[in-house]
Length: 249
Image 1: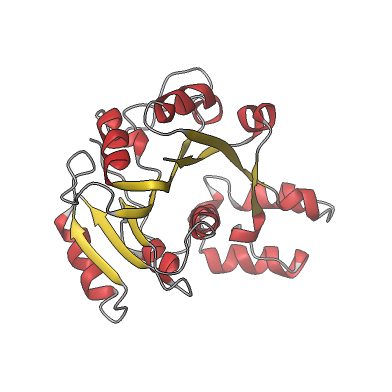
Image 2: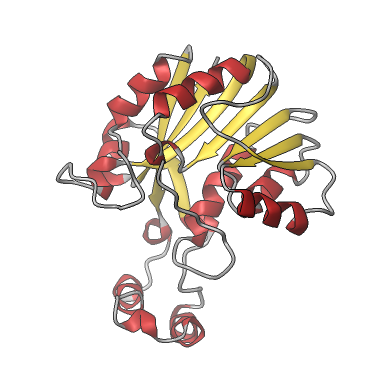
């Protein structure tokens, strides 16, 4: 397993897309559900899943220091429970969870098939599993995975095939950046590219954001509202950088 963590502890260009995925996953949670957020990192997404849902949420991560942080950070939320977990050997009994959320995890495990099987085991009949992962056709278009934290990446069909081995229904959506579908301000896209360019990123974000916001009345870094999910396979494969799978047992 290769470890990579997005902790949401500081502003980055990726905050919006991470938040959007959790907000989309939250739509599937019902009152009194028992939910697993596997590979929870700092727990910011686990906390999002609990807000206003009345659900009991278990956050799991393989790193003890991460879990120690979560237990302190979110101690005031009684609906959250954090513990060290191995995705391929969960301690829970069969049919324990109503919902399982595991975002940007499957690409880090060589034993991903075992993880999928374990998710199926601990999920109740009729329960839902949500998995997200990079779309290899966009993240690694030549088929060579160069991200040092990813042990593999998947195409639309590969991900669906893996999940269909365990779940009766699998729907694959794609997450896409949509800011420019709605906002037609001249020069907005070009200025964003400039202010996010590698060399320019060395400048403080506050300065870059001030320049962008003054010109366009909008923050430089994308927010959760700048993303959407698409269902048409051709659109997902060609234009969506992240695959978002909704599976039912």
